[in-house]
Image 1 (cartoon, rainbow, N blue to C red):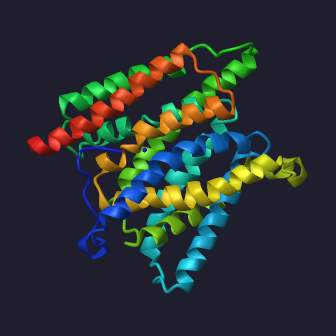
Image 2: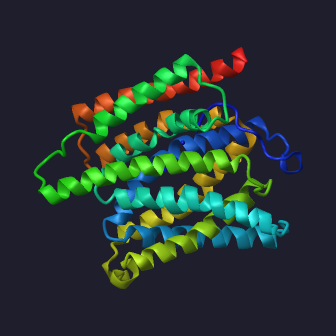
Length: 324
C-alpha cells in the first residue's frame, strides 16, 4: 500500500537521530519501494479472493513482525522502551491496522490498479494536513494546484459509474470501497507524518518489526469482531492466495515497508513520497497483464491527473523549501 511530501515535518529528538546511510543503501531502498510496493496491490487482490482480508492482514503482520523482532533481539538489538512501544502502536495501527487493513478489505471490490491510483493521493493529504492543522506554512502555489488536480482525478475515478453488469448492491459496495480507500489514504498520511515526530527506535528494522507486531493483534481483533475467524477455513484458501500472502509478508512487509520506514528516517517526506509516481503504473500494468483488469478511458484520465498532481505537489514542496 501503498506514499508522502511536504511542508517540513519536525524531526525526532537528536538522541534518536540515526547516522547518514550510504548512497547505495538509499538507492536500494528506493528501488524496492518503487517496484515491490507497486506489485503488492495485485498480491493483495489475489489473496483476498479466497482469504478474508482482516485474517490475511493479521497473519501477515503477526508472522512478519514477530519473526523480524525475534531475529533482531537475538542479534543484540536493544530492548525497546515503553515509549518506543507506545509510538510503534500508534504508527502501526494507523499505517497497517487501519490503512492497510482498509485497503485489503476494499480490494474485494476495487481492482488493484484502481486501488493504487486512489492510494497515490497520500502526498496530497500530506501537503494539506500540516497547513490545515496550522503546523506548517501555506504550500507553494504549485503544490496547491497539484492538490486541486489530484482531487479532480480522484473524483473522476471514484465518481465513475461501475463498469460491466452489476447489481445495485454490487455497485453500492464498489462505491463504498472507493470511499474507504480515500479514508485509508488519509490515515496513512497521518501515520506517516506522526512517525517522524514520535519516539520510535532509531533502527529502522526494529521500528518496522514493532509496528507490524502491534498492528497484527489489532487485526486479529477486527477479524474476530467482523466474524471472519468464524468463517475462515484453511481448505477453502486457494494455493495462489497462500503464495500471495507469503509474498506480502516477505517482500511487501519486510522489504517494502522496511524500506519505507528507513527512508522516512533518512530523507525528506517529499523524496520518500516519489514512489507515488511509480506504484500506480506498476500496479495498473500488472493488474492488466496478470489479472486481466480492464484499462478504461476513465482510468487513464484519472491516472494522468493523479500522477501529474503528485508531481506538482512534490515539485511545489521542494520549491517552497528553496524559497524559505
